[in-house]
Each structure stands twice: as C-alpha cells, then as structure tokens.
Image (tube, rainbow, N blue to C red; front, side, top):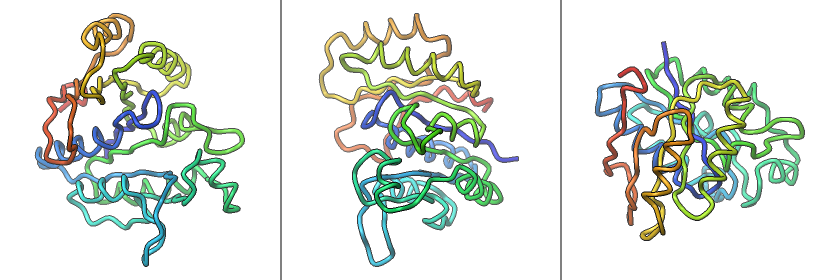
Amino acid sequence: MTNSIFFTGTDTEVGKTVVSMIMVHTLVERGYRVAAMKPVASGCTRTIDGLRNDDALKLIASSNIDLAYEQVNPYAFEPAIAPHLAAREVGTEIKLDHIRRSFRALARTADWIVVEGVGGWLVPLGKHFSVADLAAKLGGYVILVVAIRLGCINHALLSIESMQKSGVHLIAWIANMCHAQSDRAEENIATLEDLIPVPRMATVPFLPAPGRANKICFNLDLLNL
C-alpha cells in the first residue's frame, strides 16, 4: 500500500518545494521507495524535451525511483501566472482525474508519494475546483507549510479553517523561517501552536542554499513511522 503526503502552503513562495524535497530525502534515508509529484506548475521553461519546471526537477532529483517527467508534472505551463489562467491562455483544461491517474501510476512502484501543491490552499485550478479539491481527490496526509513572517497567523488560521471544512486528513503544520530575520518569530510560532488544532511537525531554519542535503527534524511519529 502506498502512503502519500500533500504539502500545501499559506501562499506561494513559502517553502513548499524545500520541505517536500527534504521529506523525500528523509523517507529515502529510512529505506522507502519514494516518488514525488508537482501536479500543476506555472512559470515553466521551454527545453528540447518540452516545458520543464525547476521545482518538479528538484523533486525528481530527490527521489530514488526513475520518474517520467510527465507523471511528476502532468500540467506544465509557461506563463508565470495563476494556473487556471495559464491553462486558459494555452487553451487547455486541468483535469483532476488525469492527475489522479498519474498519481496511481507512481503508486505502483512507490511506498510513499510526496505531492507539492501549487500556491495556497484555495488557488483555483479550474472554474469550480481548487488545490483543496485536488488534495481531497488524491487522499493521504495533508501538511500545511507556514512562512513565518508578518501576516502568517491570519493566513495560517484561514487556511486551517478551510482545510477542516474540506474534510481532508490534515495531520500537522510546519513553520518555515523563510527569511534571515523575522520579527517576533518565536512568539508567532508559539501563537500558532496555541491556535492550530494539529501539532507542529517541524521548524525549518533559514536555509541560504536549500537543497536535498539539508536536514530537518521532522516528527515522523505523525506519519506512524
């Protein structure tokens, strides 16, 4: 049976890729076969092999399974804009069932699949569905990455409220120190711990050069490991 983790964030550029990469590497070190997904990505680069997303390539490099790019990143868009707008601009439609088929294909060879969402929890992927619907469709554990900066308490609590209403299996949150300096960081983290109804899995220190070799002390007991 394949387990999965869906990392979402309080916004874009909050460290979802860094956390996802290190989680993949952590599970690999534990001896698991680990696949990764970035189902939807904007701002991709044209290459001789087609559109490629830097985050998706980093996730592939962290995995210990041979992964076809198109399974890791089924929807790649060149415009660096919201994914539903990018899809509309190129005349395509994001389909959750297509993403789930790629997910299931990866599950045939993996013990764990680490999925990185796009943007925040309610970023639209189509006219009537969002990242929240994608996470529900794939199932598995959901973890919220919170960038510790001004405004993070409001963003985190609104995200958590929506996640609870979505009925997904939210198990934890992660505090990401995405800036070298952040006023009242420890106090903000303490406030979030008091107000968020699930435990903090880790605090990610500021990483000037984030990569798969970075270590984070994840509370893996939350994954039943």
